[in-house]
Length: 497
Ligand code: BES
Ligand code: MN
Ligand code: ZN
Image (cartoon, rainbow, N blue to C red; front, side, top):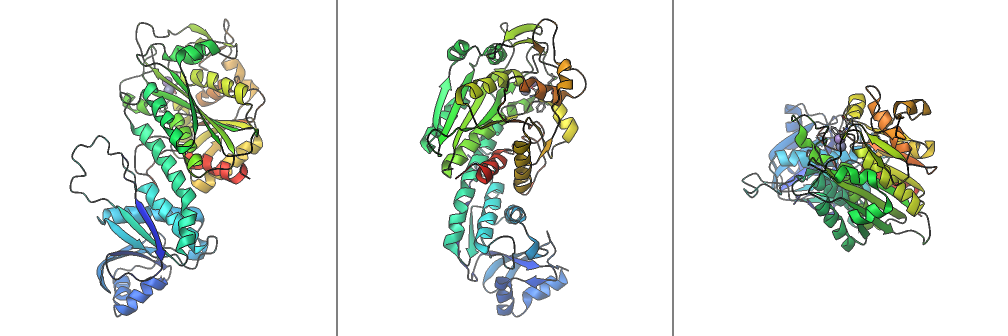
């Protein structure tokens, strides 16, 4: 489905054919391999650098065809100051390398090792470049019938390193996270006629072969549990709701699990409070929170994370037929609290209300983090660069913030406060599902908090970052898979071993 780049790690030596990607630092200082080539080609590389005013500055690229030494092509990438490069910048560089090679229509290439680094070891740097390049080398081609056409795609990358075995080993967990990220992107890109709740549940179930324990609850089982808030959203659809619980038990037996919860609205028409036509097609991505949780669970299983984790996704289609929920209907949630559904388009919080309650009740987790494409208001506040974060726990919030900086999947903390509660109180029911004109992302979060007891919890509103977000060196697709890398980092930094 997605074209996965093949990567190999080899001992560093100047290749004698094909395309080589090599590096230069600011001041036009060539790295060892490029400089070796320059000597073999009697200064041709240095001459070209001068002629093109290439100085090795960050993001400068020089593409030399037939540079000598038998090579077809030398692509020189500027590093700026190598000793200032961080792990994140090196991964982004890998993405930029893949982008440059794609633009140059190269099918295969060799990448020189990075030298002169301070913060990162050379073999790790090769693994990080491989990670960046393979995150970037994604396209959703499932519905293109003219097989590949004539555009060559980057198929394989060989990364050179002083210690190829160490680089290969460092790449193993990164590859697992890449797979999780690409799975999430695939799920978000799938159209809603294909990926309805039953199909999504089947795809999650298939992850059992990766070592996850996957349980799928039917509407009858959810009804028995009292999940009327979730079921009310699904009642106007041809497609039945599903609740999927994925478990990874890589930690000590009996250790409380970490819990990740995703909004999985496979299509959001708005229901009877129907959405306007323009742009409604984007609502196939209203399950991006669930996709990220699913991708995260695959990544954790693939890299055999040393912790116990529960991933739960509430899958419904918010559609409209004669049985659809009406504005003004009152539902009783699993928690026992009643909700007046004043707007059927504020459906995500209804789904999450029951899933959050169920997970905290059944698994007594160490914390819960939920992801949801919950409100347009979140995008109004933060645009498409940061996701909004709401939390009842400073430690959890700070950890998420730091993991966001490390992965580039950044979160910005927003307020929760009892003063907002009056905006969602209702005269007949315990609460209503909309807050009014102002602070729409906050009142949504405040609503969710009513279904969380004292467990540390964070809600990430990913409406702006999960789809149609800014193109980056690591992603050019409509779906970003946002959240997989962030939450993997959170787990790896704080909750293993
Ligand atoms: N899924 C939408 C939010 C959304 C909109 C996500 C655009 C991504 C892009 C959500 O279910 C929704 O419709 N929210 C409403 C809430 C309102 C009715 C209180 C919104 O934001 O307009
Ligand atoms: Mn909606
Ligand atoms: Zn929605």
